[in-house]
Structure formats: structure tokens, C-alpha cells
Amino acid sequence: MDDRTPLSSLDEWEDDLKRRYPEPDSESESGAALAQKKKPAEFRNYRAEARASVKEFYRLNHRHQTLDFVRQKRAEYLPLAKRTMGIWEALEFLNTLVDDSDPDTDFSQIEHCLQTAEAIRRDGHPRWFILTGLLHDLGKILCLFGEPQWAVVGDTFPVGCAYSQKIVFAEFFADNPDAGVPEYQTATGIYGARCGLANVLMSWGHDEYLYHVAKDYLPEEGLYMIRYHSCYPIHREREYGHLMNEHDEKMFRWVRKFSPYDLYTKSHERPDVAALRPYYEDLAAEFFPDQVRW
Ligand SMILES: [Fe+2]
Ligand SMILES: [Fe+2]
Image: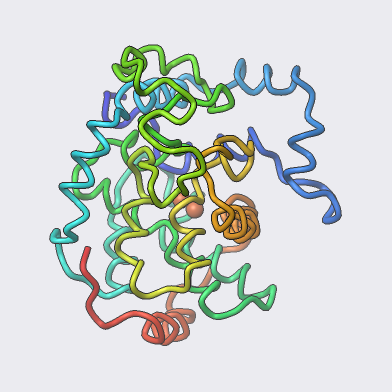
């Protein structure tokens, strides 16, 4: 374990999310309703039982995700000049991510992407929604560009304003240099009240990066899903309403519709990648050009 890879695999973060937000037993009980019913003691258990690797991951994330860091990464990546790849090629590229997960029992990245997409397809959702499921984690290729885990995954949150105390392990923000900048520590910080999330800088990771890759090609509902699917402080904890406008509120209904497919579709059967490929290549071609800038 070093400072760049405290987690044995990126999936360890997502497994931990499932522990924090367990799948509701009955379909009538939504995850959000369940989270609200959760007693404070259960949240304390979540914290006490978090693995050392996960805690260390959040410690690094909260310490290093400063406003300056986010601006630097945006300047580096948002010109989308790293490479050009088709969608399926990008999935195969993501699949080359080597970590300490066990290939016999754990699913590959491409299998995860297909599991999410197939669950959305089974429920009869529109084609753009299915494609969004397939793509939503492609931003994890940031790891292959050399980014440390804490700059690729983890719950995202606004930077340049006060940290919500409902962000997991919020106490680790004490080590973030921005905690000592009074201008960044008011509720709205460098932003205006209800300015809209499009004007708010989020901690850097796979969500924001992929949003910029996909933004000319998918419907806005899908783009919100991609851009905010890791923003548990907003879509699950309902924080930061004071930075959102009415349009954000409306669009977050789609983020919430997407979230269960992201969290709870990973443990079922192994998808047949070769058999599914033609369907998903056609679907990608419906929305994206052959070559996309990354
Ligand atoms: Fe993700
Ligand atoms: Fe995901």
C-alpha cells in the first residue's frame, strides 16, 4: 500500500459504498427512505468498521482535493488531448487496469460496465440510458494516465466552499489547506447562492472527466448521471441545495434513478462480453462518432 494506491482495487471503494448504503430489501422501500430511517448508531458502526485501506483512501482524498488541485487537473485534462479512441476501444483500455483484485472471483471493469447496462436494459429504459450505464465509469481510465486512486474515485463534493459534515469522514478535511482559507469556508464560498451546479467546481475524479468527454453526445439527463453519480453528499444526503438551481433539482431525479443500477448490479452473473459486444457497438455508434477525444 502506498500513497497512490491505498485500495487493493477501485472496487473496494464501491464495496464500501454498498456497506454504507445497503440495498433496500423490498422494492417499495427506496434507498433514500432507508438511509433516512437509519439510526445514528448504524452510521457509527459504518465508521468503526471501515477498512483501514478505505479510511486511508479518504484521508488522502480529503487532504489533497483542493480548489487549486481541481483547477490544475481541469487545465490538464479538459482540452481532451490525451488520445482519441472509440467507445469500445476505451472499454478495452479500461480493462487493462491491473490491480490486486482476484480475476477468478472478481469481475473485470468491462464486465462491471456491462452488468450495469444490462440491468438498465432489462428494465426497459431508453437507449441513451442503457448507453449511459455502459459508459458511466469509463473516466476511471484516469488511473491509466497515472492519477492516484484518490483523484479518480471516491465520493465527490464541491470545492471552494464549506464542506458538508455529511461527507464521509468529513473530519479529514482538517488537513486540507483550503480549510485554512476563510473565503472558501462560508456556505457558498466562491460561488453565488443558487448559482447552479454547472458553475460549481467539484472534486476531481472519473465523473467530471467523463462528463466533458461525453457532453456533446448524450442527452442532458444522461450527462447529469455521469457527472454526479459519485456525488453522494448531494444525491443521497441532500446537501448543497443552496448551490443548486431548479434545473439541477429536476435533473437530480435522473441521477437518483441511476444510482441503484450503479451500486447494486455488481454481484450477479458474469455477462458474456463477446455475445453482447455487437449490440453495444451499435448502441454507441448511434450517439458517438467512431473516434472520441479523451
Ligand atoms: Fe463511478
Ligand atoms: Fe459505477
